[in-house]
Length: 244
Ligand code: MG
Image 1 (cartoon, rainbow, N blue to C red):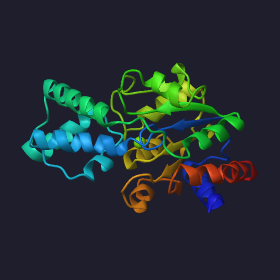
Image 2 (cartoon, rainbow, N blue to C red; image 1 turned 60 degrees about the horizontal axis):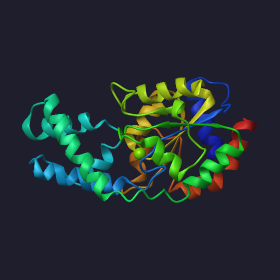
Image 3 (tube, rainbow, N blue to C red; image 1 turned 30 degrees about the vertical axis):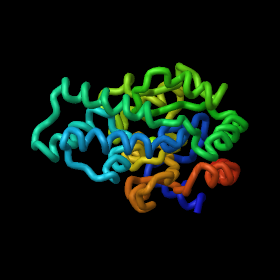
């Protein structure tokens, strides 16, 4: 299955081989078990502002900037875009609620994946749509020594956000690598779309409530049910890269 996935990627991207030098990690739903808190905060804020939504929306929207998410809800409910002021004030309310709910729990298995990535001497790059201040402190606290300030892409670095390829293109730049020298680990359909559009081999971990097919349809090259399963297969994936 791994070999087939790699061959499929190489054929589609017209590449000879994948020579990994960096792994680009999404954050929420990959490194932190935080998506339920984001979804809950969004759902409550949407209800408060009479914006139409169902809980699943926020797992489908995951990866988009807060402003784009609010726009989407406005277009659907009020048939117009949100103003800059509306975006800012609603996003601030959502962020406050998220901070109140979030328990900061790491994603089970994420540390194991990071340790293997480090053991293979691959650089770690963070590519998140999140705009939380103190992100680096939070990462350093949970995953000390795995990430550096210079290798982080957050909402402050991007104009479009996922599913546009921009965040992962900036991630490649910050990692100093080409698409065929990188691997992405993502949990969100739009994050997968963004990484695939940036021509990077993309591993999806389905840590949320969506169907596997949603991530496969978004273009994921490999799919795992969680980070523990990915950690277990890491050597096999690296071996397959070196043998093809
Ligand atoms: Mg995510």
